[in-house]
Length: 184
Image (cartoon, rainbow, N blue to C red; front, side, top):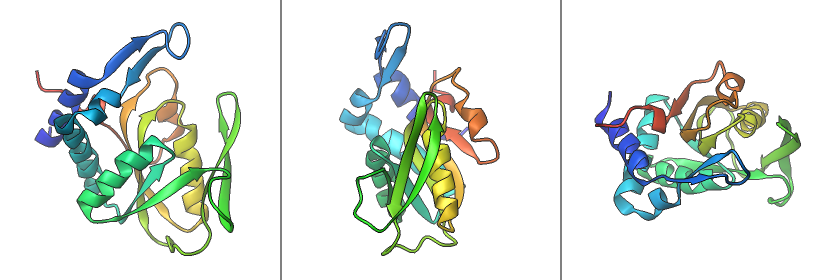
């Protein structure tokens, strides 16, 4: 295993704040705020995400609204690539490309600009903080494919087990930093 991945996993193990019964009873919330606030931990996580994006052959990073913007921007800067902000519906001026997708309880939509950015033929790696049900990452994939891009993979910091998000993303490479194994 790469030392870069081990350092990221260790930073997560050391700094993620676990909050029981949030946002509702029975849920263990993994708060990344302490990771992002600690320079060494933030650097280790960004380095891990960047390594995964490089291994997946990215031309560009796609950051998902909103924490994916923070992480994806740092990764894109490190790799000297552009970042595509994939926004929630209604946050961008027209013209936009919109993709609706299914969530566990209802639907949502993502948008990207329909002019000013040419992503046709680009290999884009999607970066986000958490993989839960996989709905948002899957919706982003559909949106980018409709725009003529290829989704080279999904790179996330944490995965919530038991919500079947991984299955929803089958067929597209997935890297989850907190499952890369921490140094003991």
